Image (cartoon, rainbow, N blue to C red):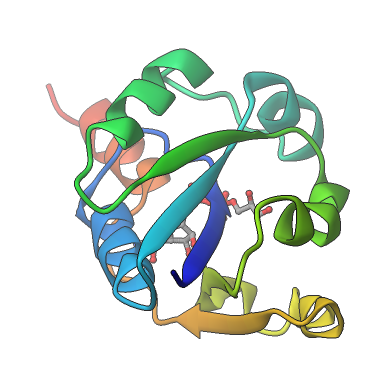
Length: 132
Ligand code: C2G
């Protein structure tokens, strides 16, 4: 069984996220999503999420491509996660191109997938904010 992992906030879940998750899952047989906790988002990513961790987790667990959701609590857990969860392939959108190549040292394949253009949680917030 080929195990894939990806990380993210996944706030205001949209088709860009789904495109990423579908392609990540297609690289193996089992997809783990490490979901940024509210604390990690606030302190490390300066992101205030619309949905809480529990709400974002529920949404992700409802997606056919997702097999397991675990918490992402810090930037440094990836190196141990890939061993803890016996991960074969690490996947991120290509806005992170090159940032996680060190995981190859842990015996992990590292794949960056093209982002879906024109959609982001920030874009959604801005567009809705500009509507009457
Ligand atoms: N994504 C995408 N296309 C978009 C928007 C997002 O492919 N239009 C991808 C991102 O590249 C990422 C995943 O969807 O791989 C989740 O996006 P975010 O929730 O914005 O994740 P991010 O804040 O980049 O967190 O330790 C890694 C971080 O947790 C990644």
